[in-house]
Image 1 (cartoon, rainbow, N blue to C red):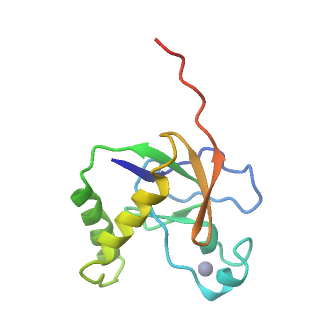
Image 2: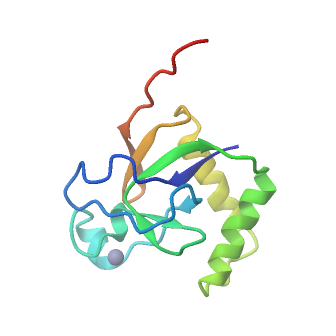
Image 3: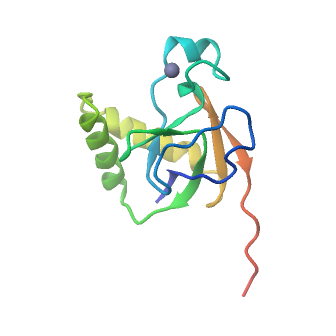
Length: 133
Ligand SMILES: [Zn+2]
């Protein structure tokens, strides 16, 4: 399925970029603190970040990727990551989140690099066309 993964691509193109995730790991859209809710461009940076499911670190750049995961696998990846980080996700929380994430990337081609501003994602770079043949 098509999901968001961490990438270093386009890092540094914007002031305030940072990348502490592992390249290619699944990411989610993490919670936002009050500081960044008021000003996602500065403050702590969580308002413009994606959160790595494995590293539990953050990056401002994510890539749309096709990964060999089923939807239930994806839900479980999110659920277990939340649990490892000390959250106790509600029964439907991981499912709802997986659904939202899948929806967000549905219209973008694989290879699109996206950034985040609070609840919105925006395209940083479209994939370059692969030479045919
Ligand atoms: Zn924050």
